[in-house]
Amino acid sequence: MPRLAMRFSTQTLLLQLGVVLLVVLLSGAVHAWLVYQRIGVEAENQALTLARTVASAPEIRTEVDAISRQTGTPPAGELAKGPIMAAAEAARTRTGALFVVVTDETGLRLAHPEPERLGERVSTDPSEALAGNEVTTRNTGTLGPSAGAKVPVYAPGSGTVVGEVSVGYSIESLSQSLRQDIMPIALTAAGALLAGVLASFLLRRRLQRLTLGLEPEEISTLVHDQVAVLQGVDDGVIGVSADGRITVFNAAARRLLEIPDDDGGPSASPATASVRIGQPWAAAVVPEQLRDLTRDAMHDAEAAEILAAGRVLVVNARKALHRKEDLGWVVMLRDRTELQQLTRQLDAVGTMSTALRAQRHEFANQLHTIAGFLSIGHSEQAKEYLAKISETGPLTFPVHQAGLLQDPYLQAFIGAKSVGADERGVVLRIGPETLVRGTVTDPQDVTTVLGNLIDNAVNAAVAGSATECWVEVELLDEPPNGDDGGTLHIVVADSGDGLAGSGPEEVFAEGFTTAAPDGAGAGGHGLGLALSRKLARRRGGDVRLLDPGTPGGPGAVFMASLPGTTTALPGTDGEQTEEEQ
Image (cartoon, rainbow, N blue to C red; front, side):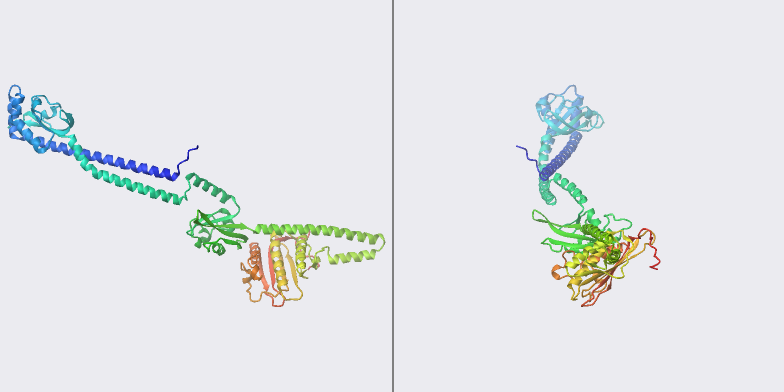
């Protein structure tokens, strides 16, 4: 059975408890040692004082000097009854010392708590004191370990050392004093240990709350996974904490919203450079629609489309929860612009392919017809048929005056639009002022702008009150000036009821739409004109409202200018022919 690994929070708790216990024990031991040393020093000083008192007593000095002058040492019985023994014992009894010992100049005991040891040499070295020095000692003698002092005894009236006094206090009495002083130390240590244990438990709970109960390995893995995922996906991701601060803002989100990195840059404006991790979400310089998605604190927001930095973005916000704990919001951004552009390009390519196949089939039939006329000798009928073909043009799409279009891309694209308009009962026609001599070089932007204008015009014509529904498109290309390419001018009018009551700038506001209320906000309504204007202005052109129209028709008239989207036909170089002049 595999052994279960101990959780990091439990390991941290045990480590903290061990550290607290070790610190308390070491502190207590050091404190106790210092107290013991202090008591020992005090005992040595007290012994030194008592030894000095005994050694300076006149009767002690006289008696010791008298015994030192004699030959030999008096017997123990005589010493036990002598004045030296009486004075020493009186001092010992009065002060509570372990011993008060008096010796002669040779170190033989003249006074001792144990009379049978009188006349014997002392067990510790008396040479320092007999040499005239006062010393403090801690040693073990015949009465046990002690802390004491040795003081020389001088003969009366002279500086001659005739003996020494040794005083000691029992180490056991010092231990008793230490035990009395150690109780406050023990209580303080116990209180510190209890406080440390309590603080460790509180820290453990806070650690678990901050890490959401995750182990360090799990947190490390999550961080690596987060960085890999957030920086590796093409979708923009914005994280907003429960307290309303930005916690995640990946590179894709900055790219889609055209916001520089945290460090900004010399060209970054103060507004965009202020978007950074930790910043309040309410103060971030992002589209207001993004903040609106996080207004409802209880429910996820539905996906919405917004226009930001010339892109159509699909955004949605989801609540982030962990074990019923509110972690904030996750806002996702997906770029729909490229999908729309690719879809338009694919439709245009498909339509052009269909048109080319139809043209090939029709040209084959026309060539067979002309060949038939010529084979039977009807050359006049062949000329009339050729003239008719030149007037009507080769397209089979239901586009009026389609022969005015020379560019195959425009032919195919407008032809495809005419099919959809015809199905809705709208006639799509080419205006008589149309003149496109060059070829389209940037079909992506042309498709977006022209397609949005035609789609809006068809919708307006269908919703209008006019009996005849129509949309008219006029295109004119301006020859290129240098290497920048020519400018394509587009004018789109319709038979709808116009935009009376709406200002020329209001119609380009993001979200503006004349669609029915149940369809507003869906399918990208309210984004086409705003996106078209942004694309045109990015190229140095513009999209504007020429005429808001009138109720009952004709409807609104829009004009778009797209610089750098056309080039001159080979051999013309943008110069006007003699007929055009």
